Amino acid sequence: MCEENQTQVTQIHILGFRGLYKYKTLLFIVFLLTYTLILAGNFLIILLVSTMDHLKTPMFFFLKHLSIADVLLTTSVVPMMLHIILFEGGTLPLWVCILQLHLFGIFGFVQCFIIAIMSYDRYLAICHPLQYSSLMGPDLCLRLVIGSWSLVIVLIFCEFVVVIQFNFCGFNSVDHFFCDFVPTITLATSDISLLTMEDFIISILIVFFPFVFIILSYFSIFFTLLKISSVKSIRKAFSTCSSHLTTVCLYYGTLIAVYVAPSDDSSPEVNKYRSVLYIVVTPLINPMIYSLRNHEIKRALRKLMSHVLTNKIKNI
Image (cartoon, rainbow, N blue to C red; front, side):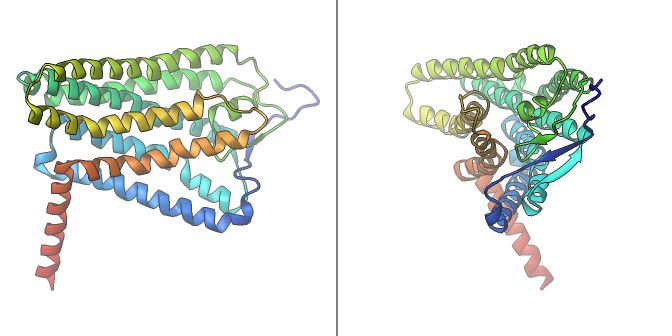
């Protein structure tokens, strides 16, 4: 309960990009166009993988779910961010703020598992090519994806149960463009030591272990490639891994920049701009990585365009 001289917080005021609101029209247009490109690029990947027969493979199945997570992650933040930019701040109920915080966590952290599963897929394809089809079947792919979503949802829900019991009294302003974990939890007047420990354990399970798994998978791939004498086979293996490796570097690079790299506590603006990398830049670049560097995606895109043009000509 709040003390007598304190007011129970029911509304959270999001400050957004203070100091940049004189450029709010430009900011709004840039982020709206970026959000549109994110939706277009990721929905295109989802559409191609869902409709093209030659893309119905484990690697592209996991890529589709990575795109789904990207769309959900960005949509949980950017529409509200556009409103905040346009109106130079925004207010939302406390429960909505807490809900956004944990949805953002689910959609962001599930990518750790999907990226790790994609590395396992590449490991099997390169290190055990003869057993690949029998090991990485459709049923296993589906179970891995469902298991990833289920585990992340359960872990984040455990954290959610703790947060909704906190008292929020007095100060109700968040100096960010969405309800991120640290700025929001800092407002709590309850003891957050249990949440801090829980968040650390969850981070180890969801972020650290998948990252170690990815590193071990690529070490195995590297040592397998050393034993291959065919230059053509090595080149083919590298081409199948390059897009995924780029995604790994981009995802964990931005994750470290936002949540691990030290920053000046007196300048929360730095954390806001770092968060833009994770929320906007990564979901924007991921479809480009796979569309520009993957021959199967390019072939599927040409086939789709050809089909659309053929239908247009027939209609004329």
